[in-house]
Length: 576
Image 1 (cartoon, rainbow, N blue to C red):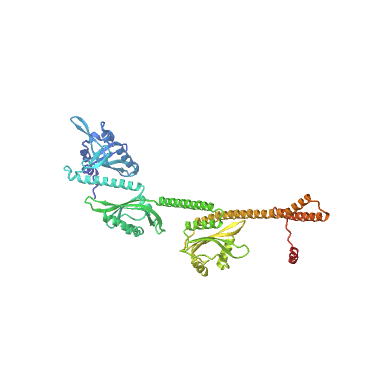
Image 2: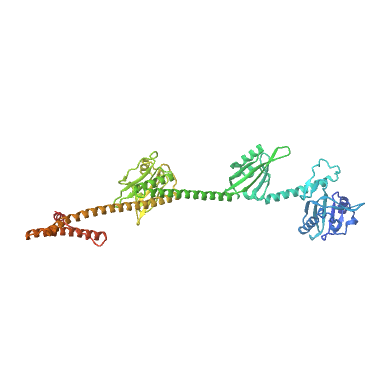
């Protein structure tokens, strides 16, 4: 028959100090080991509230962590699970010749709830191990520090060493838990890797969010994260481990599989590989710390792109302003205007050729009216395209219809393959851009640019060519109108001079006849002759004035011309 163990005797004989606490915090039991370590007796404490039996120091209440003990006991009762206070400060009262004094002590305590068969807490067992010989408390910082002279503590007996080992295990576990909590709460990702194989020892939640919920701890990086290791990170870890110097990576691209068997996710990270050096100066591992900067990196790229666009817009506006200045300087020279526009556009786009072409209204011909060309890169163009080939005709049709022509690579574009590509190669064109110039609903001309290498024409390139073509063509039209007006004024002056001459010619014989009538008395024959002279000249002047009035009516739109077929022989006969 198996004898029932005597748990009371075990309680009394245990070298580990135990205090039994009722749910109302009344002390109901204490073994000899506990009474010895606290320097009290069972009669002095049993039946009393725990904080009456072990009150706070009246002169230094902060030396007694009453709240931490109360919280730990209440937590054990509420959860029905053990709760540990790994390291706490709790002064205990002692009797001396001067009276009661409070002796500073440091404890490692665990409160274990003891349940009845119904699962109700009967009492809480406190196991408190005195670790005063191992720790000191720094009042200014309110922190515990391990004493530095622990090579040998003379009063630690073999009997208490297991207790101190147990206490140290609790403390270390608590510190490790605290460290892991700090790791997990860190805003960036952290991982600790040890040894030459870079084996994961710790990793925080942020690191798992980055690489996915994988089995990391205890595995080398090549085994745990093969997709990451192959991107050069293992080599960087090797370099930091062997050199003992930290390595910093900024805006490093990382393709990581965040879901099992899922696609690679592209992230950008900033990483610090900090070697962990032991007391002998030997590198034992790497602390890898960093941040996922994907959003910031994307934002910086967006900002850089915006800045680039603004700078390009500024450059385009500067080019257009410069072109405007040049156009004003040659306001009466359409040819010089187009030359200036071609030079500015070709220089800005870094192309060897730019020019203007006009359409002949009643034929398929196109006339190159002005070009700028860097003859070191491309040959000159013929001035007239007599009969364009099939591709050329399609280009003309598109431009006449008001559509833009964009060819990035003439050799590889299906529209220009073959003969068209060879024809363009003959004039040094590998890429081309052309925009129509529209007036009154129809295309009157187009501006073009050729590059001698393949290039991708941007929307900004197209828009700049449109603005350049339209502005220049408007200036050309104004210049042509100004020249036409000047020519009209010149012709008018010539006409008036001729008219004055023609009107003066009849006046001379009329004047002579008038003077003759005044000076002498003429006979009937002479009088008839003089009158005929005056009549003929008046008739001539009347005809001139009538013709002048007809011209005026035509120019003012008061006369409508009726077109009808005429016999040329009658016209010649009348003229003769």
